[in-house]
Length: 475
Ligand code: ADP
Image (cartoon, rainbow, N blue to C red):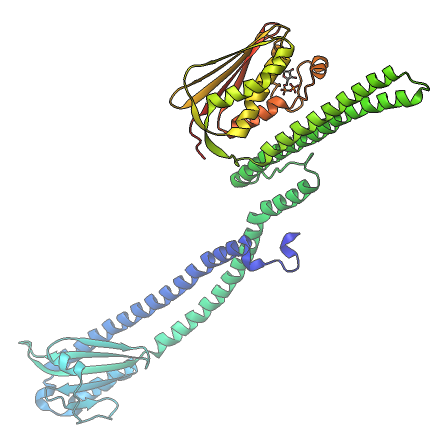
């Protein structure tokens, strides 16, 4: 299977991108969720703690004021209360007066020192100030101590360690990490399974195409798992059937060509053998057989020439040598060349031109078209018959009709006469010397000029070939 082939570029495969997407879609939200839960837990816990400390500090401040602690100025009076609360918090409480002097420090470190800090200063403006220092793990709250008339007479500053919050968070982080690891493993499995499942039809498709390469006659692509693969299968099968048709027509063409080329050779062989097989052949018989052989050689030559013209037209698709051509002159010239042949059967060619026509065409190829049509009108005609050729134009196209009062074409043959090697009446055609390639050449050349051709014919009465070609050639 392709996916495990040595040297298979996994990073360049769709499977990898699907894997990556599923992986990212599974893991990123979980990481995001964890970090947001952690941070909101921290915020909520710190703010609840801050509220609690503030409330307790307010109670303490009121108590200190009502006890007249600031007036007495004796730390003995309030130290026991402050120590009690400090030990309850497992924190440090400092009482600061309006001179920024520490009246009491429950840790006994900064007693009687002066504290000048922004927080204390702000708190002296009768504002509660709190601060959470996550790096050093403590919460600090400054509560103003006010008299009844709201005059600030001091500040209570409480610092409390937040290691408990930190420890809780570390525990939660550990749990989250284990969860995330489990999610990651789960997501990896889902991603591998999902990408494999999604890409499975494409593996099947590539295997089918490998099979089709070796046997495109009998195989078809049929991967119907998804709408997309259905579409691809449908388009692929349409392309396959077109290739089959092309291949069939190529094979048919090759077999027709070899058949057509072999027929004159076979005749020559028969003629030559019969001459060689007899003794004392009269000179008249030699002459007769040699004439027949010469005719077969001419026929072989004709087939080869027609084939070459056709191949040239096929190969030079789009390679037209476009020039501005006087179509009237071209037709006159064609008819001039063909009149002697028509004369042999006493066929009258009437040419009618309604206006001068100049068109952007490939002169050589269009001459081939005119020649083949008029030649056919002469070939498939009756003695003393007639051929009527007309040329007309409007602002967009020029129109040529080649009409004859000849043998006509049977209805069922009309749709096939433009096919290579098709001949409506094989015996008659052979006698006349047709190769079945003339109208195929005509059709190819007309289509290359973005023109159109059609036939109208009644058996026994005659045929009309009508041609329409644009005056201006558009690439
Ligand atoms: P061919 O070399 O046999 O003439 P074409 O491709 O020119 O080959 O024509 C194909 C067949 O169409 C001819 O064999 C003939 O049966 C028929 N056909 C073509 N032109 C005419 C026509 N003007 N009248 C009657 N039959 C025609």
